[in-house]
Image 1 (tube, rainbow, N blue to C red):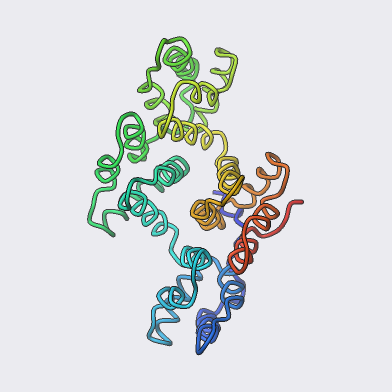
Image 2 (cartoon, rainbow, N blue to C red):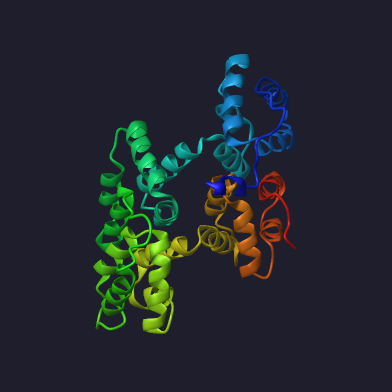
Length: 319
């Protein structure tokens, strides 16, 4: 996968986990904490290197680095730094767990993770969730959701999307979707759920083109008109991710910061999870779609060490 090189965070050259652990120890020793030293170091290391620093820290000082960071930092800055210290798979697993197990269900997290991860990543998440909590992720999500929203989540959880383009099915899929939505009084949601949940991204992109010719407008428009609530959000996320995952995350970041107040949970989650995957591409799409750069929007929407760390993760301005 060439995608790996599209992150803003790269492994540090001349990396020494023992030295890094010492720097962090000094930054947190005694009265007061050198937040700047902590963020400058951790944002400039890859996740794999941060895992090595955790081991080196415990080996040298007999203390858990993440627990120490939690004791020294606070607020959104703490949430961001602790997020960066988690291995990517463990981060997704705990985000899903918190989305289901808290008061109410955080549907936004379920939608974002399950719509944007590859089938292989989803399979790894399901296995890691079972190992970590001795629970079945599908059962937990099914117990917390309902209707066609639940059905589409369950389909995505199987991680069994077809691969490649089923040439003969492109037109047929487009027609079936058109009949299930625009041509019908009421909507046959199950058809949307089955086709959008099971076809590959390449196949779906061709279906969307064929659908556009048939219906005269984009698939997203139909979904907005024909569905509502969690199902609508999930179908839209699946369609957007089939078109372009970076574009989906650019929009997600924009709406997390747009208007009064900031959805910091979403901002942190996306910046943490995409920083080594495709944040360069997310930045590029952000600049194309909106009247400002991702960097400038973060700068205007956040403050303090939290802002400093986010801007370092962002890796530059596309003004």
